[in-house]
Image (cartoon, rainbow, N blue to C red; front, side, top):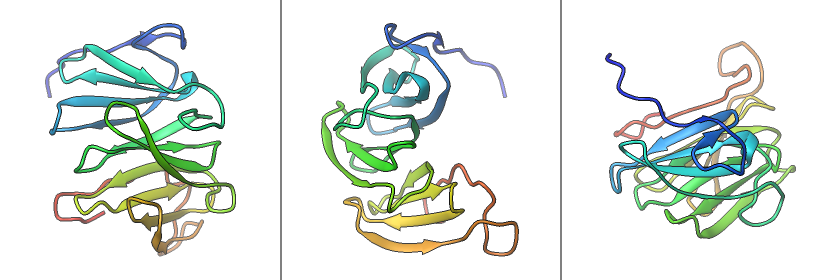
Length: 171
């Protein structure tokens, strides 16, 4: 492929469009935005498809709309933004403008959640690296299915960090 552009630079939480260890990225065709999990700045940054900074939300902490290491990020077909809060052991869901909608999880449900994907039906897939498992939820956090365990054998995952869902719903 051809190089197109560079977005952002190394920066702290006092700057817009500066990053400290960005881990997750999700793009939408619906509104042409790119969402970035700016992990060490404990925030979500939003850019236009052309790379211009648009908005941000979040800060360090364990409250609603705060993060302790946002890692994975996904956007579903309705525009809801799902963020994995790695050390908060939870999933937070936001409207496209950053308005908090809901959350689920906790240390009893997740060990080290990292990756996330959402399909067209509103189902959400969370990758838990701490226990080598993928868990399928409804958009509201109801458990649907789990599979995998930690290891290197058949049906096992060794430190999984990400997943994706294609247009037909295959993971």
